[in-house]
View 1 (cartoon, rainbow, N blue to C red):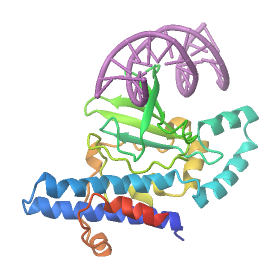
View 2 (cartoon, rainbow, N blue to C red):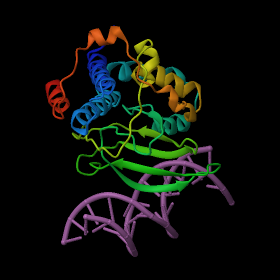
View 3 (tube, rainbow, N blue to C red):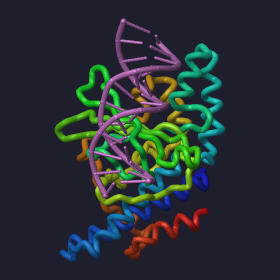
Length: 254
DNA sequence: ACTATTTGACCTAT
DNA sequence: ATAGGTCAAATAGT
């Protein structure tokens, strides 16, 4: 059973893939220009950002309902302090945690962030940077993220998202940011993006393993390739090129 | 002047 | 005592 939230996230992913397909056709036809490709690229990035934003959705039913149950089942085996710390880390009270390893330092995640610190991490060559939502004060948004370079060649940055966004800022796009491409030629529910699977899985993962293994998506960047799949192409017709289309669709979701 | 970033100090958990 | 996370004054950029 797919929830409404999952459906919307899937719609956004399909939209992104539709644009990727359109971009592919343009490239194959040699119709390459910033005018024709930029809107497509922007929409692809925004679609994925929008889909990711659902992961942080406070209304995500599977997370609130079942993750609490999972937590409760594990609490009996842990001290209250341990549980409190674990909660602070990630799991309880609607907090959503998601880790992304990307070849870019600032993946376009649809939100704007303000840096508030950095630390040298023991055993790591690179400092960890701490960001909080730009609207942390204005809208009491408690979302934060940590970015740390974990590989040099090729450069890979690990971004760990903590807390949930309650601000109204969505889909802020910045062309200087890169993106992580996703392969669509496998089972969508399990292989494309682990963060789109049920939060149950995340909670269990975090309990059974150390926090360092939460949603670890450390992959070779060559794994992130968009493939053409006739099934998805049939599910998603060619997408009109428009910078505003995505925001309009967001409004429609409200 | 306003906003964002830097960075040493401070706090908390282990 | 140490490590990781946050604060806040100083600084830089616009």
